[in-house]
Structure formats: C-alpha cells, structure tokens
Image 1 (cartoon, rainbow, N blue to C red):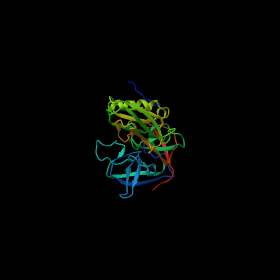
Image 2 (image 1 turned 180 degrees about the horizontal axis):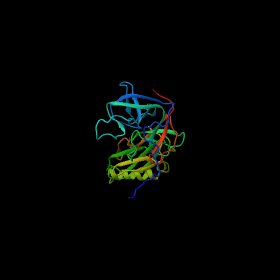
Image 3 (image 1 turned 90 degrees about the vertical axis):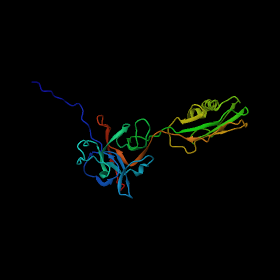
Image 4 (image 1 turned 60 degrees about the vertical axis):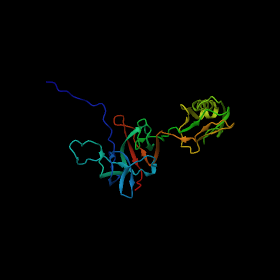
Length: 280
C-alpha cells in the first residue's frame, strides 16, 4: 500500500483583510447596509453611523480604513465561504495599523503610496481596487459634424484648445466642397488635425462617420479647458456640435494616510498596507 504525499512549493502570504501585525492598531465596528468584502477600502457615513464601500469619483481623503477579515457565524449552510460581510450586519474596519489587501495592479514598493480606483477602467480594474500608482487614462474629446453637404465651397477653421499642448490654441484651416457629406467633412477634419505638428503629437486623432475624436497621448490630470471648436470661416453651411468630454478610462486616487510595507505576494497577490493615522 503506497502513501501519497504532497509537498507545497509556495505558501500564500496572507488573505485580504487579515491583520498582519499586532500592537498599534485600532479596529472599529459599525453597521453596514451593503455587502463589503474583506480587505476592501471603506468610507464612513456619519449621518447613519455606517461603513460604506468606496463609490465612483470619491476622493482619496474619504477612505477611512480596510474591512477586516472575520470569522463569523454562517447565516446559511451553503453560504459559508463568501469572504465578505453580508448586508445589514456589523463590520470591523481597521483604521490604524497593518492589514493585508489584494493589489489589483502594479508592484508595490516598500513605503510606496497606496492608491485606490475610483472609476473602473473597462479592463478588469474596478472601483475600490488597490493599485500602486496614479491611474489616469487618456482624456477623450468628441465633436460631431451635424450638418454636412456645404451650400458653398470654402474654408472652415478647426481650433483645438488644450492646457498642456504647445502653441495652444491651435487653429487648422481646411477646404470643403458642395459635394461633401457630413462624414466626408469629418474625415477631412481628422486628416488635417492628425497632420498638424502640435495637435498630431499631443492627441491620437480618430473617429468614424461624422465624429471627430481626440484622445490625449500622455495621461494627465483632467483638462477642463480641452475643446474642439469649428468655425465656418467662408459661410459654407457646415455645422459642428460643441465638443464634449467622452472619456471612459479608469482613474485612481491617492490615500494619503496609507503606505505599502511589503512587496506583493506572488501566490495570493496581497501586500501589507500600513494605515498610519486614523481619520475617525
């Protein structure tokens, strides 16, 4: 009779929400009205005296702590390994001390700043995920040719304004003819903007049909001045809508009172976070 043996090659460093060091720690219990996963960043609702999940567009300053992993009485036989606090229960949150979190993106450096996603990026990162850097996607601006088929041939002028673009605002002139459709006018605009040395270097120019889309090449803070303005210089009859910000990329915010104090565990994907000072 043979006896089989399994020898592990690696051990999981920790589990999300596990308190990793004893001593200087502060854990506070509050009720919750929604499901909160172990190891998730949470904020405090002072009106209802509750912990809440981080919401889209929240600032890093609202993050009060991390939901602590807890062993609790199961409410149902088939629901005993959910790794979360159920809605309408009590939840423990560490607001000062050391705790393990799942790092969804990046490799934390010792003493590195902690960031939390406050907008999903459409590629796997969700609101509330811990990451290791400021995550700012390209800003996207869209203008639409609402009236093509120029009544007369002539020149239209497209002016692009962007805070960090050299020589902003940049005006680009191009010719249209009576036979052009809205899609053909938009295509001429896209070609002219892409060919401009300033606009073409600062933006990726794209779009289909009557759309003209500019996406910043280098991620940066949101530019409220970004705009595409089309002026019908020769009264051709061409009309473009006012441009709008159509950005869909995810963003993260710094949590100023948290730093990473270990590297990312290769098995569990977790790292230790030190919550330096309590905010509540």
